[in-house]
Image (cartoon, rainbow, N blue to C red; front, side, top):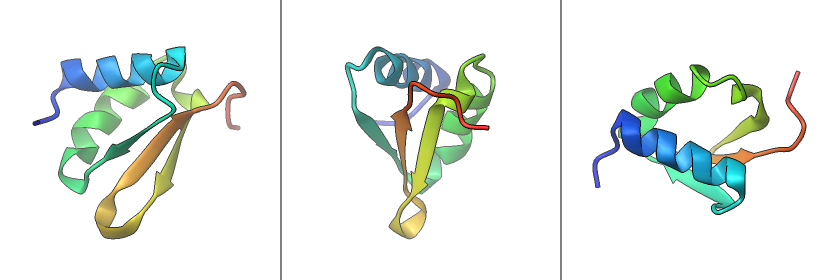
Length: 66
């Protein structure tokens, strides 16, 4: 499945609602996902954890990071 801005928004909304606990983004989808993420008012509530080969696992946290 190819990530687009609409799908990225849906994933972020599901992380926020708790429907998803975490979501792994592949290296080739990172820039699209990041573009949608940083445009959100609540973007500081999302935590990205770097993994091997450019993958990033995103989670939603109740407290915003500083």
